[in-house]
Image (cartoon, rainbow, N blue to C red; front, side, top):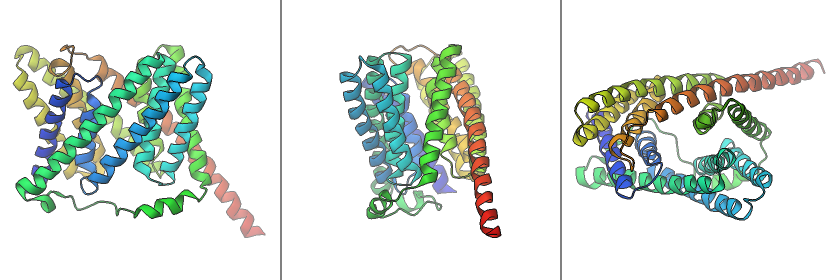
Length: 357
């Protein structure tokens, strides 16, 4: 029990530390560093160095490539979109094949981020987003490693800090062997994800909902990359539930801060929110994703109030993340259900044909 409390407290303190660094550096989109800290320390403690490196390198390499594309091909939007889509597809395919999966996922995610912003805004805005994304990921990864080393050497409780359940890490050469094998299922599924994202972006464009497109895209990827239909459904429901739960608690903290406008109180609320929800996630594995999303929402809502350049509360972000998660989760689950039904029907036909031949 003590190790769970310790881990959750460390996650809360690391979150505050990353917020302070991004505030001092005046970085935009500083909530990206918070997400990185919470995800790495809560989900990937045992393989933190590898995951931090893959998350950073995947994001940085995608930014460099997309920066070149947006800089030299900005006059031709169609070619820019085609290149961005192809890059996103390739690395999403690698992720689904489990080839350097975490780094591949973040290469595809960063490329998709920048293309979407380029489409709904301008190339300069896309480059600014990519730049901020990469530097915030670096800060989040650095903070996670710093606090893990503090636990290892400062507290001497490194082994007690580690969770019991973690996936076995593959040797690097396995990925190179897998790289050469073509996976038809991953190929088709990657295109289904890309088409779903494109569909939602087009719908949002005509409905004037461009502000929720990024959050919808994240939800689509999170839901559709799950290996099983049941997991896709639960991930969609859990993401929506967690975002709504965290938003409600965060907005409650905002009301208290309006009555007692002290910055130290905002620090306290961030730590309390992150610690409580990460603890609930650790104690309830079947619904841990709900509480993980809620933990992320607390600092994301409070940061603009005291830890941003504007120092003003922006309730729009909570709304955008909630609606984007709802829309993306809904479309993703519907389309992935159709995908699995078609796939299962094809399998049954093959089995029936083999049985009768």
